[in-house]
Image (cartoon, rainbow, N blue to C red):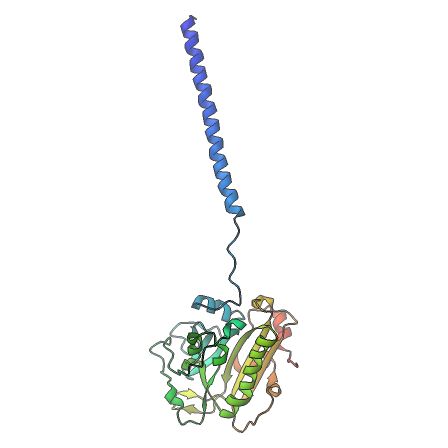
Length: 302
């Protein structure tokens, strides 16, 4: 082997060694870059969750919060399901019964963020969210009937803004109530519920409705025999998953009758289970069965 051939071989070998070293270095950089990206992704802090008692600003939040205890009748927004039609707005969720011209139930939550300086709007009107094929209930259907336009979700539970308050005046949230019920004992329980939030510093999950048939207004709106309500108290800012065996649950069932006088609302306390049996609803259905058994068969004596 001559000298030139040897030198050429050494140069070629050196080039190969340099190429191998370069490939190794490049490979390490690529691997390190990928590792850095993975570590950054894994260690990045998650987005902060929305606070459970923050104001409701859209229908998606409303559906999640107001139906946290469950959908008592498995209502849907299928237009063919006209007597169990699900409506959700920023103020509450409800199951509408087109045959009765009123809600089967209305569900909402009350926190301190729901109270404010908004005045009572008094703008009773048909619900624009109902399908056009449904019967149109108007404030005039109550005129001269002797019955009040009674709220299920009260106006005073939604004073945080004019918009929220106004939604409580949709006729889908209104039922025929006797003045004795609406202005006295029913109103007293509404006030008691708000006082729990304001003074006892709790949040409430609420569902209310009516049942029975004692005639119709304008052949359109069934006058119920009874009105009922259930409130579940949780710590401020807690969601419905905070409910346990010691959670306060108060249920009332009141006759929609004249000449009630002014009894204490506590005389109408009952169990959630008794209301379920009278209405064929499944209240608090998102709770485990053993917890439902405990809470739904207990009368609140406080």
